[in-house]
Length: 203
Image (cartoon, rainbow, N blue to C red; front, side, top):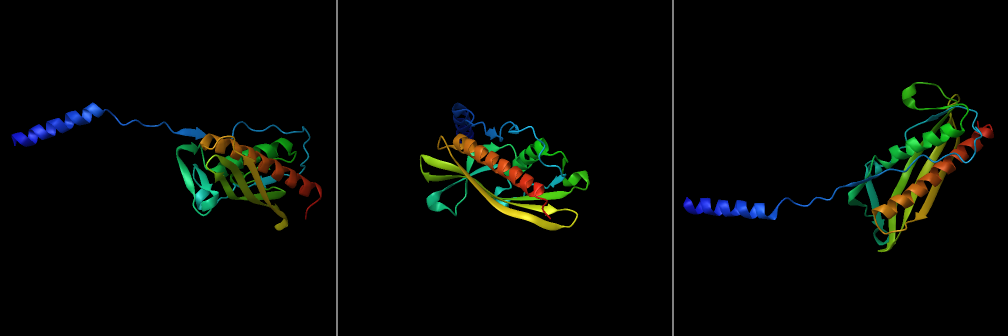
C-alpha cells in the first residue's frame, strides 16, 4: 500500500511539473466587408426571391477545405482555422446584399412569405483551396445559378460559374484571401447575369 501511494504521489507531481497543454487559439474568418456596388443605378426593376445558397454536405460546415491537386479526391481541412459560418451561408448574405444594392424591386427571402417576380437559386459546387505544389495554391469557387419566373414557374435561365484566384501564401490565410476574392467574383457575375436576364424580359 505504501508503495502504491508513493507511485501515485510521484505521478501527480510529474503531471504538475509539465503544466497544462499548450492550446492554439482557432482563427475565424469571414468574407470581409460587403463590396459596394460599382454603379449607383438600380438596374433590376423586378423583385427577386433569393433562396439560401445550397451546398453538398462536405461544404456545409465552417471548415476551410483544401486539397492537393495530385490527390483531387481527398478533401482536407485546417485544424485551427475556420469560417465563421458555412461558405454557403456567407455567400447567401453577400448575394442578397449585392442584389439589394442594384434592385429597385427589392430582395426577399423565403422566410418573408412575400411573393416576388423572380426566384434565384444557387448551388455551390466547390469552394476550396487547391495546391498544385507545396508552395503554390489557388482558391477555386464553382456554382450553378438558376433564375425562375415565379408567376409562370418556368426556368428563365441557368448557368454554371467558375472562378479562381491565386493564393499569396500557402496557408489558411492565403486560401481565405483567394477564396474571398473568387467568391466576390462569383457574386458580381451572378448579379450581372440576373440583371441582364431580367432586363431582356426573360420568360
